[in-house]
Structures are given as structure tokens and as C-alpha cells.
Length: 344
DNA sequence: CCGCCGCGGCGGGTTACTTCA
DNA sequence: CGTGAAGTAACCCGCCGCGGC
Image (cartoon, rainbow, N blue to C red; front, side):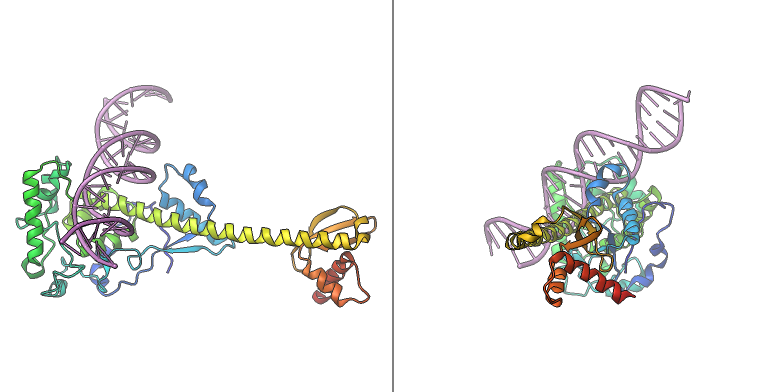
């Protein structure tokens, strides 16, 4: 599945918001970005400085589909590089009532990937708007915990483990003791999954979408915004890695080609010295074998065109197949004639 | 019409924290 | 149990576009 990222239509609603209940069992959502050529990476940086990077990717993908280069596909879905918090095989959305019962198995909360809902606070405001109102004037780091309103965890009445309690308690005390401490709060796996879904719909948010998402997830709009910024950064980083890998392969290929050509040149020089007759032949120009479309070196001598080739295996073949022995130029001519004869 | 200003969004970079091997 | 690496939430800064004046 190939999904072109599109940022253009910010007015487009999140489709999945309407169909969230259907998402339950399907984690197999391909999220691929097309990469036509690696070269665009450097070029686009200036040209698109004020465009969204992902919009440019989208354009490049369209271009790449036109070109003959097979696009590199970067799978950016949670499946691979995405954190352990996404290991669950099913996306469950606790705000959907039919999911409640299976949200978190009892007794599993101390294991890895427990979906530690650090944002959830015992005293919950009624709405995300209230949460936002509470948080709005406080963008300072120490405001985070106190402003988080997570009516999000409905599993087992809210608390999933003693560890959660301890962590929250620690945070609360930290906040009280150290007002300048920046708290980093993990989003739950459900929140992350939902944000991931929305990112696939739109990699950027308009204010409406941001608010809607924040409300859905009981996060502050600022958190949603930050999450999307970071997510775009991660995507770009991954794409850069893919670009680098592609360029690396290109470099290796070219190095190999260069090595091969050097050897070929060496062989030809050796041939030239061993058979001085050919030294009298005129200067050569590059042309292409009309049949196999490989580059050949053509030497024009008055009326007759004799051809040697960079792909001198052709010539060697012609030399071997034609007795008495032909010189390489005649052999190349024979080679081309053979192609023409075969085509006719 | 033009310039200025405030606002908001974004990218890039960084920091601080969490989790895991 | 301590530690380093990786992942990521949150922040800061600068730039730009846009709308209002």
C-alpha cells in the first residue's frame, strides 16, 4: 500500500474520526512514501523552504511515478521503527465504549508496554476545552502535569497499577518541590495510535483538527501540536536515512562502473600496443549501438564507419565468432549488423 | 497600495526524561 | 543494580505568511 502524504487540504476532516470503531483490529496500515530519485533531497531544501517538506515529498512521489526509476518505499508505520508502545496487535480506543473491557488485561500492568497513562489525573475536568483553559496561560514546563486532563483511561476504573500511582505521586511531588522541572509525559499507546492514525490522514493540522484531536484524546492542543511536529521530524529523518542509503548505493554502483571502465580502458590499451595496426585508426566519438542501446565508441574513416565499443565483450564476441580474425572495429560493425539482421 | 505589527504555524535544533538491553 | 543507547515529549528560536491597521 502506498500512501502519498498530502498536506494541502487542511479542511478535509479526519475520516477516521468518523470510522474509529472500525479500526479496532487492523494494525496493518501501510504508510509508504515514494522516492523517485535520491537527488531531490538536496535540491528541494531550498526550493521548498516554505513549503511543507511532506508536500514536497508528495510532489516528488508524483514525479517519480512518471519517471522510470522505481521509487524507494519507506515504510513509516508503527510496525517497524515505532516504539514498544505500539506493539499491541490491536488498536483499542478506550473512548469507544465497546472497547472498554479489553483495554488492559488485569495484572499485566507492570510489564512492558503497559500503556502508562501519565496524563490521566484523578480529578478530571469535564472537557478538553476546560483542560485547555486551565493550561492555556501556562506553557511553562511545570504546568504540564497539573494541566493534563485525561479522562482517557477507563480501564479498571482509571488506575492500572501501583506503579502508575507511584509515578504520578512522584511527579506531583516533584512539581511541588521544583517548579522549573520540565516533565516529560508519555502518551499512552492508545493515544499514540490514534495520533498515528490522524497523521496518516493529515501530517499537518489546522486549528480545528487540532482541537478536535485534543478533545478526542483529552490532551491539550499544544500536546497534539507538538506531537505532530515531532512526528514530522521523525518522518523526515527516516526519509533522509532512506535518501542517504539510496545515494550510497548509487555511489557504490558508480564506483563499480568506474572500476570496470578503467579495466576496460586498460585492456584496450593493451590491445592497442599488442596490435599496432589499429593505432592508425582515427579518433573516436561516442555513439550508441542502435540495437542494444549500449554506448559504443565509433571511429569514422571517410566512407566506412568502423566501430569499437566500450562494451567490448560485444567485440570480443564478434572477434571470436568471425574467422578469419577481424579487427575490433570490423567486429563491432558485424555486431551491429547482427542486431539489425535479427531485428529484421 | 505600501509598510508595520502581531499572531500563529512550521522546521530545525536541543534538552530532559523514559525505557530497555 | 548501574549504565549507555534509543526513543520521544517538550521546549526554544528564527523564519515566514497572513490579516488587520
